[in-house]
Image (cartoon, rainbow, N blue to C red):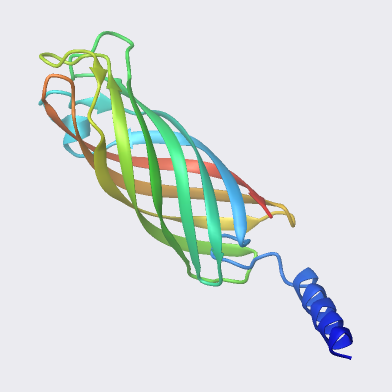
Length: 198
């Protein structure tokens, strides 16, 4: 008899899970893999300063994130690479900064359980910058910099296994360029994500 009860309980749980709505978390599913493509826009002194490494211009960015969670809260971790052009920073013509890093944090759903879910998030990131050389700073790779990010976006469930995830985030991270010059990267990333839900 106990085995029969256990079997019935397991069957009921499986039926309940199978009938659960697609949007179970702050970003649509307990587990997702997101690919992102968009633009990286420098702000503050990184865009208009006249120090070493400052005076950067906008460029392209891409990234991959994995999210895990349920209800109103979802944890995320990811990898991204961003390119910034050199305008007034004294870089060789056509050579960009390349910022490669990882990030992790939490997203909070503002309307969990629906097919269109606005969200806000906060996280930490670490980044290395490949510099083509700026003024007195030689070409090379920066030290590992640490910083934070805040962001927001919308999760739009298209099908059971596919969602669109446009978003924007503002990041700040400090690092040291080759030669010892300190660089504060402050930038805005606007991108469109395509998510696979599991």
